[in-house]
Amino acid sequence: MLIIKSVDEMKRHMKDIKKQGRSIGFVPTMGYLHEGHMSLIKRARGENEVVVVSVFVNPTQFGPNEDYERYPRDEERDKKMCEEAGCDILFMPNKDDMYRENYSTYVEVHGLTEGLCGAKRPGHFRGVATIVTKLFNIVKPDRAYFGQKDAQQLAVIKRMVKDLDFDIEIVGCEIVRDVDGLALSSRNTYLSEEERKQAPILYKSLLKAKEEIEKGERASEKLIDLIKTTILEMPDAQIDYIEIVNNETLKPIEKVEGEVLIALAVKFGKTRLIDNMVVRV
Amino acid sequence: MLIIKSVDEMKRHMKDIKKQGRSIGFVPTMGYLHEGHMSLIKRARGENEVVVVSVFVNPTQFGPNEDYERYPRDEERDKKMCEEAGCDILFMPNKDDMYRENYSTYVEVHGLTEGLCGAKRPGHFRGVATIVTKLFNIVKPDRAYFGQKDAQQLAVIKRMVKDLDFDIEIVGCEIVRDVDGLALSSRNTYLSEEERKQAPILYKSLLKAKEEIEKGERASEKLIDLIKTTILEMPDAQIDYIEIVNNETLKPIEKVEGEVLIALAVKFGKTRLIDNMVVRV
Image (cartoon, rainbow over all chains, first blue to last red; front, side, top):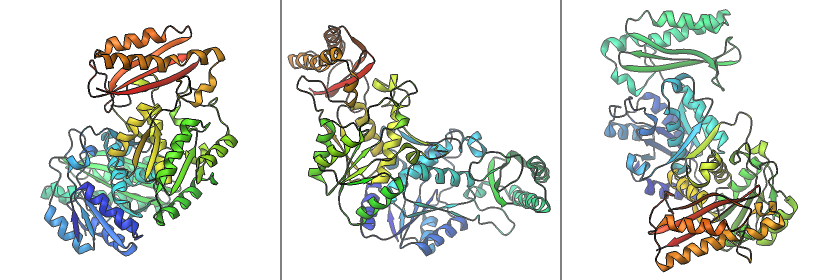
């Protein structure tokens, strides 16, 4: 596995690979990898001749009071895991090389970014769209892999790729969960032992809602109430949002119909977790 | 010369050319071509294996009260001129194909876009940066050619290409002028006979300022006054702005130093003309 830290070197290297006509699969990450990332890298490995993983904690997608500084990092572990999963090129740029002097350009996706996580994290998806555009231009992938856990991010990137005419296939991959159902996330490391015990309630509440839908319930309000009541059984849970939206437009819907996304964000202590489920009726 | 109207067909075609490893030179235009455009196409012809010209009057760079609807168009003439100048592929998409249903993504370049033309045309450079990003992703050029007449546009695109890591060389080309000094522009066609007679004062006023600088004048205020007085000798001239700025940052400067841009916008009747001169001291 080749490790490249310089943006210019990465550009030259990827340009060469592109010229050779080999297919490129790309997994952009913020590092501190877990089995969720591994599943993306393995999928990329199966579908492409060259697999590129980036590890970059992107400052522009963190708000001023968010966890940019304390976001977990472990370069050595990330390297080992990438190698294990079959990565060919690991790109680990630093922030001054990615955002150089007088940096001024941002990509904004309207409409999809105002609700859900966007409401509490203004500027977050602007940062995501911008860094993904930059990485796409540097890596020049044929396919890029994103986890379904960040459902809004996935929808935003799909929209952006369509709108800006990127010639890249965006592959959304299923959420990987711990044995007790908690969706894997680098931020799970923030949880205290007690909070960690309570956190699987998020998945359980989503499963309950799904069951109700299967039994015939269609009213979003009732389903949201059910999820809320379930989650609030846990003493440390503080709900940020629970929403049922159309899975493409991310617009809230009153009645479950077609392909819907049930999405939620809940804080346990200082740690904000997200989870979601796509249901088709 | 191949004429392509469909965005998807253009993408497929350019992807094939890219795979063959041939160098691509690109001249994006809004059509109604003149000798200024021709000089860009000819330059691209000399420096690349494949020359692509786009003709697209981009709605997102026009304000609600601007001249999108009445902007001059002449498809047949454009085709002939492109063929003559050595264009290989002429891309003429329509606006519904470029901006499809639920279009939501925009590229913003901050800092450079607030002054000069940006002050009176809010959203203009957002539209420019967005369409150029889209065209770059569709055409995949090695080099793209822009006229120095739109000096702020050129600076914005250079900044955007650097910031978003596009692997494209931006080539700025000299202003082409009529025999009496008027910078060529598709909008010159709006001028009445009387206004057309007065318009060359813009270039004359810039030359006067340059002469003063060569004689030793460094105070922007005095130079701007000189340009203003000169232009206002013409009865139909209404000044929008006259500014002296740093040619890279586009920030106004008090003293002429290094590479400066003298830029102006002046209305004759309903027609707004721009012109500029780069001076190095």
